[in-house]
Length: 277
Image (cartoon, rainbow, N blue to C red; front, side, top):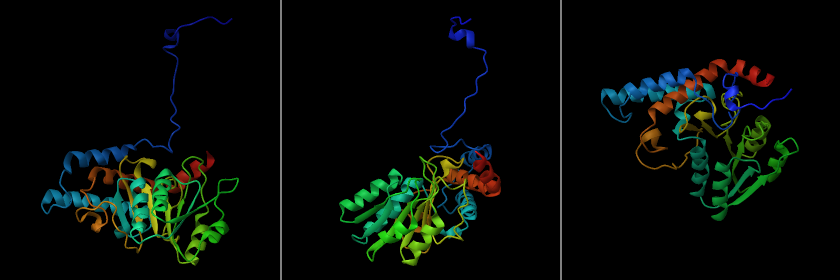
């Protein structure tokens, strides 16, 4: 028999909330919270200052940089800390604008932080080719190859799609792009920490990432720059070797570094787990 009941009747029923929005942001790992708390409490020095407190803060930043670099398998000097992948993506595309109009190849399934600056380049006279995807949401390397011409200065591709979860065939895409001598930028925000992102095995020139997609804090990320003289988007002091001005977010950077260290040590288990899901 079905009877009417009030909310109060269910007050003691077991209830478990399951969070299913990890592509938007992830909860912080306890290790990340611990390391950030230590820095927030004790590491108050400015990393650009010459005194002991500044030197201690600088050491924390460089330790975190080494951890990010180890996960990505690049040199620490190639890692630039930013406020996240949106800033990193804008830095890449806006840096192109300084060289005058050219040709950009991207896809029709990019994140808004590529879509918007690409549209801005178009308004400034750039030619932008947006490659379509197939029925599975994947970019065909042959289609990218056909889109390249002598004026192409950059190809920008989202490695793992934030809405569909589709992982692009980056190895094949990189091969066709580099065969033409064109710069390749990859937004790896949704791939990092979930999928092997090993730049010692991929000819990627520029890569963007955010900490908060991999159990790190919001408001911090990185741009990997490999051998390119990238004009800074944020101009100011000499921070990040002159490539990104402004006092570093030390606690956020430390949290990002810890998240990367956890991802590096757990990557094989994570890949197996996510694959089973």
